[in-house]
Length: 207
Image (cartoon, rainbow, N blue to C red):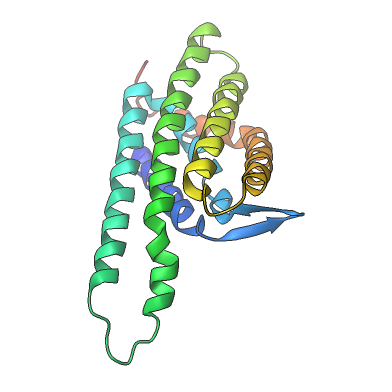
């Protein structure tokens, strides 16, 4: 039941991030995509799942996230191609917002698959090196590198040719700085979630 709940939260955060990434929000003098509100927390959830249920289960959930994102894009595309009612005047707005989601999702999925799988591999590498101790270390060591990979890949693929290179670099460093702060700040939450699940004596899959 807990695994199902965590999987649902993971998928929901991923879908929200893919859609909200269409909007560029201002952070000081730089602009970043609004997917930053949800996406960093997918790493929190995947690390919790990795810690409790193991690498195999986490990898399956990462692929599940990939599939549901593709389904979302397909549904957006089909809905956009269907003839609009004569009185509905928002087709252009629909196409402008949700029509740009496929490129965002393509960039997101490439960055997502590379960074999330790196996160899982790195997390368990650190777990073995530390012999299961120092959850804070493996959580942050795996996530900080994975977030850097994700940020560079996503911003480059999603927005190259749309914005100037100096704007892209601004997006990259500000986005990564925020993700880094979130990753460090959510460490107590990782400990809390892992503790709550283990307290309920749920079966844990070993690596």
